[in-house]
Image (cartoon, rainbow, N blue to C red; front, top):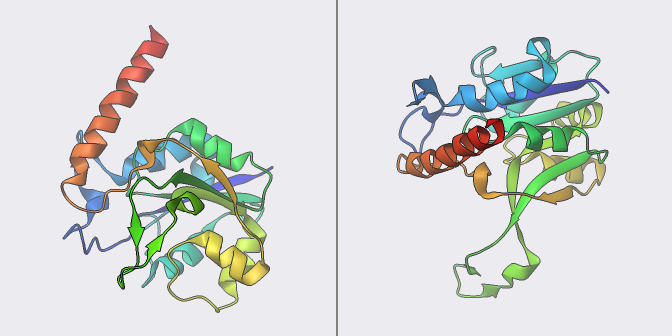
Length: 205
């Protein structure tokens, strides 16, 4: 199986009020964390950093399509990681890549009460918080995006479902996939970072 990876790092950071992917975190740009984790698995020739190696699109959809088109054509399965989720672990990426379902996503159970703006409540036990990274059959995802039917999607599992009718396979995972959205979120990433660094030190002792 030929694995490849796309890093999404071309966002404007509207809510962060700046390019969060370029913020220095422990003397390294934030985007390098997820990038280097994926790089260790797929190798330099099979990873594209959108926004760094190639320009990003006008939307996430455009950026993903550009990344797909820039990957080696013999790619069979692709994992999509985000610069905004820097604490993804190597074993999580491997878990996605080695899964045999054509559309696989990490999820977390909801912990907050969810309510419509008109006051109606939703049973959170029936819902998941959909996370990235996600992994896909490369040719099927490229076919869906290449159709031109999608312009501004926030999630690739929805693209696979709407174009191919393929429902995603869900894998419940840990809290380390927290997404940096606002400047204060770096404090949460710092906490996750310290926990993971300590965990690695314990393993190596």
